[in-house]
Length: 441
Image (cartoon, rainbow, N blue to C red):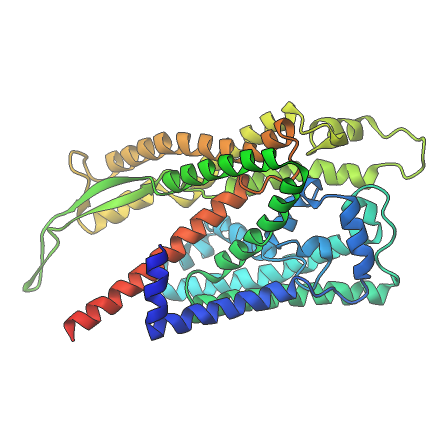
């Protein structure tokens, strides 16, 4: 991997793209530390010292924003609105016929779908920024504990200005991601998520090191093992062989080639973890809004239930086993659900039949679809268990090691490893193109 980067910097074209990508990532990181208008940054820092964002109700959203959400910066929402919009649009292709037609239209249809995703992203940005500003008016709901106000002026115009600033920040992030995709290296939005998550690693590891050196060593050994396992699983692919029959079209002969359908063990990526964490976040958020503010008043029964069983690190006693069981079940369910939506065996079988393709030993048409469905169900089962296991690692570390913010587990490590592998593969493919050009010349 290091040799690929060294060779890339020796190639003028690739060096320019890499430096351009690094410049955009630097701009993004600077934006995460620029506070929104109307926010007292000093008070925000005091609140952050008194409460850990990792165990808060908005922990995952804060992770994906690179810590910008808990700082209420101009990039507070990060890439979460875009991710949510992209998932919604992808799921709607099964429900809305118009979206399904656009998906089949190739590049023109994909451009239209991207435009819809942008519009939905801005709408979600307005909604999420309004929710965040509402929570910020009572910082105890955002940071926990007894936190003083962080907004000296909480008038209507000041709140509207904050919402407008955060929404504009989301639009700027989306534009920066597209610039990387078009002129840089790798997928822009994926790299922005990568840099946001990776930026939190040094702080989390330094906190663990300051607490206990032995715990830090254990965490690093476990983290390296998890990283190796994630690399291995993410590279696992089941290849379904496909043979194309020879056809005569006019005076030319087509087909007669062999290829394969690559089916990844983890086809859903981190989407099930995001879905499960987002849904389990709702009871805790509802409990925060309905908790009595007067001292000595007992909360409602359902609020106490949510605090005890459906929250992360409730009362400082660690995550309850009920939360872990529900979390695991939801991850497994959403893995099968999302895989069934994104990969449709009937459509794949019809396309193969249309172009004269078949799986050796399997008849074309319905038998092919049934075979593909059988295979996808078999490989999705270990994929779902893998996602559930990796996502439970931070919770187990919280209970057994006392590490509040375990950085090398869950969705974060899957994203970091996956994006890193994709970026290195893209660099290597472009290096091979340059080598071939030099050989041909």
